[in-house]
Length: 312
Image (cartoon, rainbow, N blue to C red; front, side, top):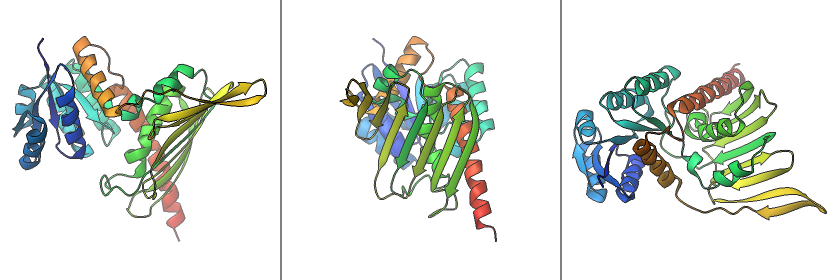
């Protein structure tokens, strides 16, 4: 069987991980890695195989599909270039820095009839499957995503860096339009928001409260979903969870059975499978665009609050 040829644009920490996983997937050959810094590309291929290339055209010439893990500001340029040259693209999140850039990527995917997937990796976290299986009509969702200061992605705020993961998952779970947003943000170590909280109200009555921080001493990635008959408390990081439901004696606590695994492995396998079958990706360009639109609205409101609080 002919192997699917995979490439990676961007040989930083995330690109290196994509290359590592492509080298492990059955039926996939890591063919090429591109980076503006050729030394970094050469370091990645020395670890995982393939060849370092000097241009996007060279990358496109030897790939059926590619992950784009370059800085967000370059997503539109790199993604559209590869799509135009016939490559199916997995774009790291956020899909782009602006709605216009994201729409250009979605349009290019349609025009050149190539798949555009977006790397919202938590959609492939094993904790999400049992949640989806038990979900009926969520009424209240609470999400916390905390991390130490990353010393990367400081050109964007914590909403686009971290909170967007939870915003995309919540949009996926609720499946209803957002009708109102309240948001606050605090700048501590950068010129953008380092801590943010958003409260979202949906047309169907669901409410979500989302908190993100990148200046926490500890890491936390948790989501709790409440519905009429039960609520689920899930830990993305530990890949474990509990369900609380009515029983004859009151409220019973039950462990949720979760088959642990590497979310990025699941994400790339799903992308490869979608390309092979000609199916819609699990997280489409349009869904990535919707998550970006929401994240930008939250960012705008959070920064408005920051500006008003710093005014004399």
